[in-house]
Every structure is written in C-alpha cells, then in structure tokens.
Amino acid sequence: MLGDLSFNEMREYVTKLGLPAFRGNQLFDAIYSGKTLNEITNIPKNVQALIQNDYPQVKITKKLESRDGTKKYIIQFADGEIAESVLMKYKYGNTICVSTQVGCRMGCKFCASGLHGLKRNLTSGEILSQVVLINKGEGGTLKERKITNIVLMGSGEPLDNYQNVIKFLRLVTSKEGLNISERNISLSTCGLVPEIYKLADEGLNITLTISLHAPNDEIRRKTMPIAQRYTIAEILRACDYYIEKTKRRVAIEYTLIKGVNDSDACANELIKLLKGRLCHVNVIPLNYVKERGLTGAIREEAYKFVGILEKGGLSATVRRTMGEDISGACGQLRNEVLAGAK
Image (cartoon, rainbow, N blue to C red; front, side):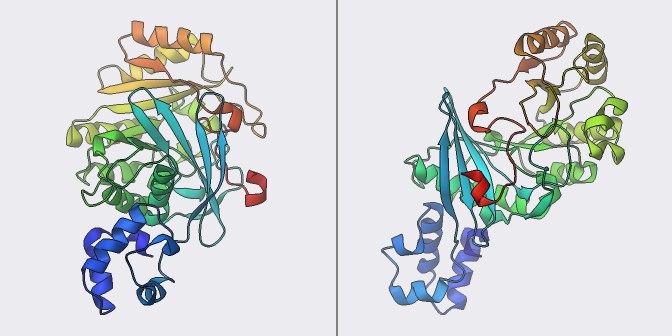
C-alpha cells in the first residue's frame, strides 16, 4: 500500500508505472496531508484510476471528546477493522497516542486492549494514518503540524509488530514527511527482551518506556503473562544496553493496583531495583476496566507511593489521568467491532 512507502519508494513506484517521478512527490504530499483520492486536485483522473487500488482507504468514523479536552478517534481501515487513537493536549503541544495492532495478545490483566485477543498487526502506513488523519482533523497540514509528540501506547504491543513499527518510525520522522523529532516519540513495551536489544541498535533516539508494574517477578506474574517468559532482571539488562547505546533515559511505567503492588514494601523494593539507573518512574493509578475486576489506588495513595520513591533517590511522578470519561485513558483502549465503538 502507498501509505507504507517512503518518499524515495513512492517515486520508484510511479516510475515503474511509467509516470514521471514528480507524481510520486504529489502522491506522497497528498497521503501525508490526509487527503482521500477524490480530494487530490493536482493528479489527473487517469492517474488516480491507475493507483486507486493501492491508495490508503482509511477514515475516521467517530470522535469522542472528554471533559478535559482529550479526544478519542475511531479509525477504520480498508478491511473494516478498527483501532483507537487518543489526542491529548498539553501546554507544550499535542500528543497523539497511536495503536500498533488491532487488539493485543499480551493479555495483561489490567488492560482492555487484549480482552478479545490479537486480530492482526497494523502496517506501517496504517499506524502512520492515525497521525496523518488526526493532524488533518485538528486543522494541521504537512508543513504546519498540530501534532508535536507521539506515544506508541495504544492498543497492541509495539515490539510484537517490530518491522512495521520501525518502518513507521522512519516514515513519521522523515524530513519529506511530518518530520516529527525522534526525541518527541515514546515507545511502550511490556518487555520483549530480544526486541529491546534490536531497537537499541536501530540508531533511533526515541524514549523507551517499560511497562513494569511490579517490583519483583512473583507479583508481575500475577498480572502480566509476559513475566513467564522474561524476568525483570533480563528486562533491566536490556534497558541498560538501550541506555548505553542511545544515552536516553528510560521511562518506567508502574500502574498502582490496590492490594497487588501498591504497598510501601513494594515502593522500597522498587527503589532497590532501579536506584542508580538512568530512568524515571511514571506512577499510574489504575484506570477502571469493568471486565478486569481490579481496583486502582486513589491519587492520594499514588502521591504517597511517589513520595517514598523520591525519598529513596528515584525520579518519579504521578501521571495525569486524561480521557477517562471516554475510555481513552491508559489501559482503556480496546479492540471492539465498529458497532461497539459508537
């Protein structure tokens, strides 16, 4: 599909069709501007007919807006499958949370995304389309973006869709495209160790975020099936390698689940685990997912937990909850049939 192609690949595509290379420039600009095929005015109808089967067929089918200004977009792809993307507005700019898979197979007990398993991976162009369409929807253009930051924290495990995610990162940061700074992109993983090492060697300066959620393997195995494959020690060794290669601080996500990982003892164990590492801990009060039956710690308890971490020498904050009233907060994005997303 054309949305998966880089600038140079697009030019090669049109020349193979017997068209001049500048048609590739026009197609590339149209795709990155979020235009449908019918909205392209500078390409003749006979050329449009030639490329119509390869042109992205992606659209926004629903937009929900939270009381706090957060917006959740329902994105439908050519095969009818959907994904959810969330736009969060901050003082420093607009951050989009994108999905990398339709559903998820990691099965974390506190997350809605894996309730129905994994349907399929998203292609690099389908991941990109979320950014492009929402940028357009917010009044942005190719050269004057409304999107400043990207977090790969929507539905799916990004490193379980490794090749498509890496291609997406190269597309979205390319100077010919949206040209988003690598330093403004974060990728969250539950801890696929081999892929963390591969990511470190890609030469990308993105922020690696680890969904840890426990100070030891015994507690982690209660809520995260991936803990049966990789230990915390293995994950942290991979993080150390990532830090060494990129010189970037790693973010640690820690969702507070009442009665599971929220005790003072857990906080002190987390200090011993992370002290001395170039990392920052984001403490997240668990957001409600009705099917999961888990209870989150209240924000006051989260601040107390962070206080213990800071006293122990860690950099830590309580993450601001955004979009909870539209099921757009961390852990609430889910794989639903289109009718269920209305």
